[in-house]
Image (cartoon, rainbow, N blue to C red; front, side, top):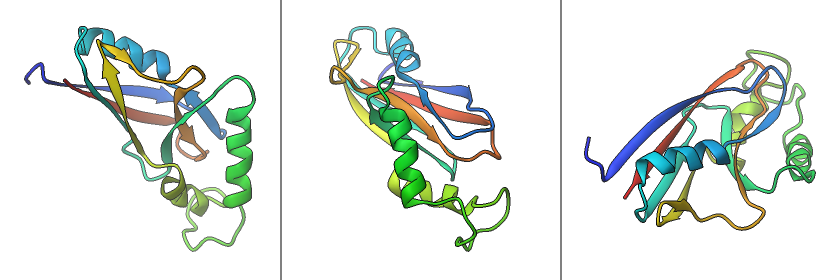
Length: 140
């Protein structure tokens, strides 16, 4: 594969509860190797039907606020047509329409260009799937 495009798959243990996992450090570590001081784009993609990628502040309650907002928008009850798995699991399949399974971010001189309080996060409301894959791709 050309050095213009590099990709890596992260294995993320998100556990058996709803969770937001900060991937910023993993993204920065990947770019130290893949970008080597170049400009380009970092794409983060979650190849799952029940997870998403969000760029949000973490550690100050915003991650919990996002989960609470998702509970309001997508209650874990029996209203969903998609009914296999744990009760309310159908909501997890609607999640990627609200929190998309991808993000593309600028990289300048090998550095991820996030705002001061922004973090790259995996959003996983699916209690039935404790292991996720996240594909990081750098296009220089």
